[in-house]
Image (cartoon, rainbow, N blue to C red; front, side, top):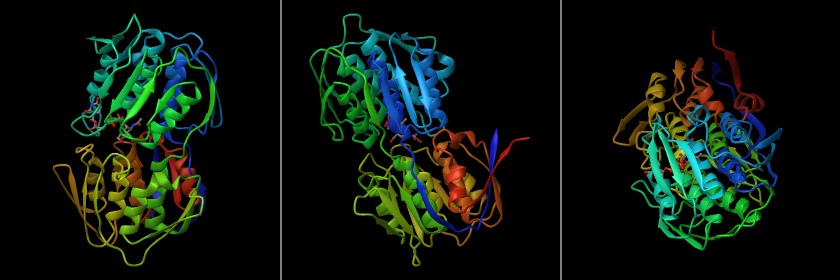
Length: 423
Ligand code: EPU
């Protein structure tokens, strides 16, 4: 297990490219199960989550070739049971359920277990697939879905108590592409990653309208075909580096971003007193650290609101921003594990009932800390950039799940970081 040593105090300068989106790549890779023809997917980030998805597809019988960011997948003949050993490693493997069911009329996927950021049930996924005519059974920790006579279009409301579901919308949308008739998803997730998946599916021959809004309409087609697609930039990786640049930078430029996906994050960083300048085409931005800084109030919300996946990183930035910040995560109210570790570095944070109250301190100091999940680990790296001394972050595999070569990108910007093997 690798660790990251971050020697605080370096100033970040220069520019880096943002990678393709992890959360768009995962369902898009799974969607290749919907056709027997080859799909070529570009800018798939080299992170362990996309590697798990590729392993799952291979285990299902897909022929997969990967060369740098391009993945070529042919699912000529696939099995309908996803292997537990692989599925259990990543919650997002649930998104093979919709395409397998649509293609094979049956699928078996293990029920995802608990997760450090919260309970994370899949009731909405199942509600949607049942509405399309699937029979759902649970046995031995597995979900079996069957639709021997095929799926039929239906009107489905996917709203849950915590708002819309991203992967649930993806699953139902993928299954509905091959259903007979028209499916209408109300209260759909409108995240850019859902739109990217819909664009991929439409290029395969699906008939989807309304993706990127709360109402998606899918007219089922008989079959889908192969396609070439380039994945959208990772807005959470971009946001994480925006926060790093605000904390420790002097004019850091991020290339290959999408301004429209970053509005809420940009607004939060600007409210705390920093400046973000986009180029006219909105695909590159430069972050200038502000001089007069202040705390902000943040509420996570579904897109276009402030993303829960940027909550921990912003908490790290605000930990050393003068004033009081109030950060509420209504999507995952238990997603505050990073706060205990940030407190070990000297942060003044109180967490109560899904809300963190952060009183900005002048400086954090290095401490051995432990990554607990992907975004929490990113928060610890950010905090360590300006902390006094060398911070050792263990359980680095969490960060490798979703940030492509983060240590190399930080080094390129001038940070003093070292990846070390655990003894
Ligand atoms: N929910 C239900 N029932 C369901 C599904 C979800 O109650 O059947 C609840 C969840 O417990 C949560 C809320 O609905 O409170 C939203 O969860 P959602 O289903 O949207 O999450 P997800 O689709 O499983 C994706 C991202 C997460 C991101 C969330 C929210 C992927 C692979 N994962 O998960 O990303 O936090 O949407 O935006 O796209 C990450 O990248 O670090 C990450 C955790």
